[in-house]
Length: 357
Image (cartoon, rainbow, N blue to C red):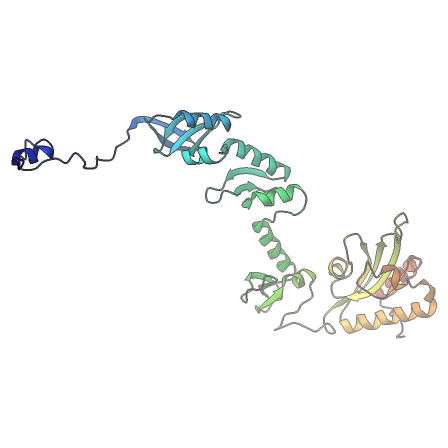
């Protein structure tokens, strides 16, 4: 027996009173459930306001939070986030449910307190975490400038393995180094070398020429202007007398005071950069006599060395004694020659020059 047409239509569901010709399908997918948010209730975490969600909190979430040192306060922002209160410090944290159930959440307040202590150990002041990179923070250096640095670097500074360089102070030092030599720092090397800078000869006696110069040469003065510079033989120079304190030859021995006689366009640079091999060597300029030209300084220096070689060869210090401390192979004498050489410098200053050897 064939079914009646009405029975077939009833099997598809009750008729729609507004549209009798259309039947509803009981197997059709229900619309997505919309979760309610409280209209006015919100919570502020790390300066950001989040809406509270009127949604249940599962018991297994509470158990997981308690096992990891937190209490669940509420659900906020969306259905995937929870507000956790740290049992150690009471700080609030917005954490995803997936993170709570599958890993150990970290309290931001406790983390910042730890970073603050690490920064204090490094001699800097912690300001705030970097919002763009979780391993970085903004700190204030001893000079007062604020910089962004990785916390791993802060830890190495605290252990004394490195130091933090302030770019602002570093640029000011480079400008001062150039001005002391009569030049002006223009900018980085146009060819991209990290060891060179672009300088302009804009000092009181400058010609305006721009030139690439290694920064170490700008510090030591071992360079010349390619447009108006002079060779060392025509440029002004100095005859200098140095007192050098050499570290003891043996671990329990005394320091030894020796004398060096030489010539240089810049005796100060000679003592700081060109002569010592390490920082333990102590060097003091005893006297310095300016010379109009480098060739005059060289002639007088050779005359003095020749006289010392003839009159006091036994007062020359063997090279093996100082070669590990100084970047020279000769011209080092016993301290007993200090007073005779000082008298010779006084005669040079008065215009009496020694004869050529």
